[in-house]
Amino acid sequence: MKTIHCHTPGETDLQCAAQILKMGGLVAFPTETVYGLGGNALDKQAAKKIYQAKGRPSDNPLIIHLASAADAAKYCETNELFDRLAEAFCPGPLTIVLPKRDCIPYEVSGGLETVAVRIPAHPIARRLIEIFGAPIAAPSANLSGRPSPTSYSHIENDLDGIVDMLIDGGECAIGLESTIIRIEDGNRISLLRPGGITLEMLAPFAPNGIYVDPCVEQKISDGQKPLAPGMMYRHYAPDAPLILLEGSENAFFDFLRAEAEIGDLPIGVLCYDEDTRIPKNAVAVSLGKRNDPADQAHRLFSCLREFNERNLRVIYARMPEKTGLGLAVFNRLIKAAGYTVKKL
Ligand code: TXA
Ligand code: MG
Image 1 (cartoon, protein in one colour):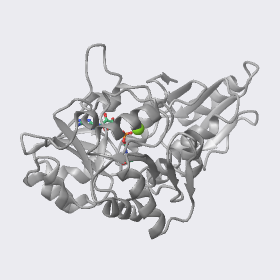
Image 2 (cartoon, protein in one colour):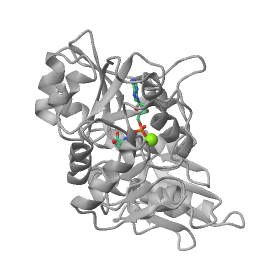
Image 3 (spheres, protein in one colour):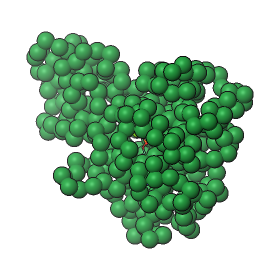
């Protein structure tokens, strides 16, 4: 397939993109979290195409993207808590799972009776949805299993020749996918995937606390199911095995020094800007400033892709803090590591 590459999207380009969506085609577009691979959310054939293009299992449902929270009631059963959350956080990096209406095909909801709804803040995404005039179903625009795309080169690497159009919006501001929550019985909140809207920000809306799906922090045992089907799949994995190290700063650098001397291939280290004691023969990639989880979130997926440009024996990363946005960074890292943690 010949893909249209659009680098400085203007109104006419977005009209062209909307036309492609109307004809059942696929368009990758920027959002403030990660790039999305969009198709018409009301068209089951378009949903099938999305799964096919990504190589994604069809039981892993898609998020529908709307231009305004006021449109949500057309596609799902909203409630008062939804309205209050939307007022506080939408448009923005929050996805809310609610019972779906019949117009949303099961191909989009992965066979579930619920649908995930998000109102993105990125102006290109918003304008595209507005012109299209209907919800856009969009998973992250990566091939299944790869890190989510946070820059144009990522979508070009993954989807050139596979989808109809790629829209350049530069680097995604947040860099990690949206927070996903489910509203239970109209008033309780469950966290399915951590992201830019943190537990701390959601707390005032949940006087009885927020249920955190165990798979956010740990590997779930056989037979258990995560609340978000996608959390079950191996994700984000770089080519070399990634291992998280837990221990003191001194133990971390001592371990790296010993490891860097072993084997024919170099080791990779996911470090912070402030780290000065990385062994010279290791391939160091900085995740950002040590005390700045927003910077780390912004860079994480690019860092994971960068390691793939080198032939490495193993990649080591330090265990991040789990508070605030750190929980989302930790969740993506531990999944990329296949839950392998080594205590030092
Ligand atoms: O930031 C984001 O959310 C990006 C941008 C493009 O909006 N999208 C994104 O989509 O990350 P995706 O498909 O990569 O991840 C969607 C996650 C999956 O884990 C899926 O299982 C879950 O949302 N999900 C979707 N619908 C659901 C539902 N009805 N119930 C539970 N989980 C759902
Ligand atoms: Mg994804």
